[in-house]
Amino acid sequence: MTAMTASGTSATEPGRVSGPALLKIAIVKLSSLGDVIHALPVARALRRSRPGLHLTWIVEAREYALLNGHPDLDVVVPVDTRLWRRLIWRPAGARQVMGKVRQLKSRVRAARFDVAIDLQGLMKSGLLTAYTGAPIRIGFTADRCRERLNCLFTNRRVRPPSSAVHVVDQYLSLLEPLGIAPGPVEFHVPIPTAAERRMEDFLGEQGVKSRDSLVAINPGAGRADKQWPVAHFAALAEQLAQEPNTRILLLWGPDEVHMARQIRDGMQARVILAPPTDLHELGALLRRSSLMVANDTGPLHLAAAAGAPTVVLFSGASDPALSAPRGKVAVLQAQKLSELAVAKVAQAAAALLPAGAGAGAP
Image 1: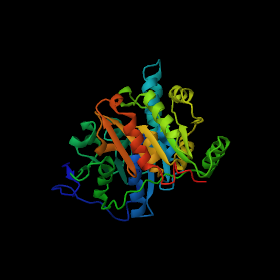
Image 2: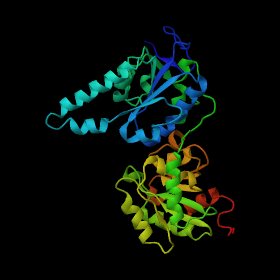
Image 3: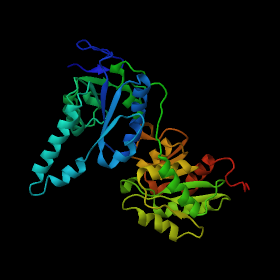
Image 4: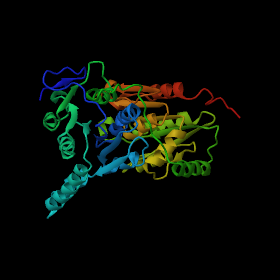
């Protein structure tokens, strides 16, 4: 098979695939939370292009909750490769893993997909793409795959155009073989009414009024080098909390609650420590927020997708042009995040807060 650019040029295989027979499409994007959110516009573009399509998304179990029940999707298939990696080293674990893999392969093969789209570019996503048995398997060219051997599992390979700098645009370029123009980028993140009601009740118990600007702060990060110091977050929270009608909401994820408590316990102002939340409840809190300040983490991208303005803090090793959240966003970057001044972050946050914040509105 020859590689095909996003412009569809190929000497030996058809540049575009379309027609009424293409009804069942599998999207393979396993993780992480931020990456799955960045891939949501692909499902939205597919759904807009032809409402009769049957769309399935194969995703890691940890991110499954975000997609389960999503109106753009007909089926969501969870896989737990993290569990497989743990089991494989245990006695009889390899047998258990092989059994789970066979079950998954049988399930996706039985769906009789027409098209599979691998947005991940890894060996494991390539294997899952092959398991679908789809005659048309779209992925990136080897030089654009995160693991080059991924391209062994695809037969329509796309090299994103140079204009596709952001990862969202790179994902959308994989629709070209289907003859689908991406159109406007839409992050559709529905929040169940029950989750919104639970979080509204929680905020009401904390004394949050409808007029209040809620500033969400998430001090956690996936790696230490991507984390702004907790003491800096505390100083920022103290400063923003002085503004009239502004309340601070401290968010936390697995193994992060100690950071949120450290900020809360060291402050003079009364702040809100978020309760344990699932992804829908977290989304409800972020949708209610007037602003979120965070490191480059999944919850930050969820906030942007939910429509909240964001201040994102990048370390020098990251590329904001590739992966910064879309929407109303301020990007701040330092080679070492500890060198990023609190005053600079506070200035960016103040610029994004609604006009009425801090004005003493009744």
